[in-house]
Image 1 (cartoon, rainbow, N blue to C red):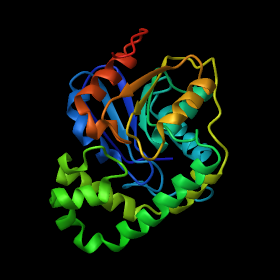
Image 2 (image 1 turned 135 degrees about the vertical axis):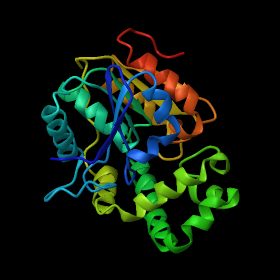
Image 3 (image 1 turned 90 degrees about the vertical axis):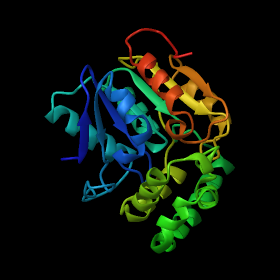
Length: 265
């Protein structure tokens, strides 16, 4: 499948995969810094941004297959990958399949259990309905520190400090994504993420200590399923490390995909 993408920089290729409802633009706070060191390819997943929806089921499995086809068509098999949230889960799935190289998964989903599933769904489902209703005034809301705080407290530890243009675009793509509702339900109540101890490249899992979407307690389960992974904690950081701690995130990504055993600390 053809995916919309942006490509910039030189060096070894690096694929960036956004989360649920996002687009390639979510990486704006770190894109230039990464492109100074790597050939960065930031995609819009099916049903997100400018990429059309899949014709059938939309799930982690079908999204992983679509990304794999994209990589194969461009001779990018084995590329290093970075993902956040649903994208973090997706790059772990690609690593489990043996499709990619070094992997950095930021706040990956798929490791909740019991009441955490209902917490995830019950907090995000009404939030997306509100975001859709507020689209006519979203520009004014995201231009205000107070508005950003009210809108993005679940995603960021410091929403008032986020760039207005980045947050406005994220709220727009959340509202416009035709895949959002189906994926939200499948992520919340479908099968969890399977693991492996034999991924072809290194795996680093980054987690914000103030994450209110993928709760920090889930990190232990992620390590149990990916026992060869290294865990990195972002202090004073929420669900979007690339927003709350952009410089630290760039350092982690570059170290975690450098082809050695560094954990970025």
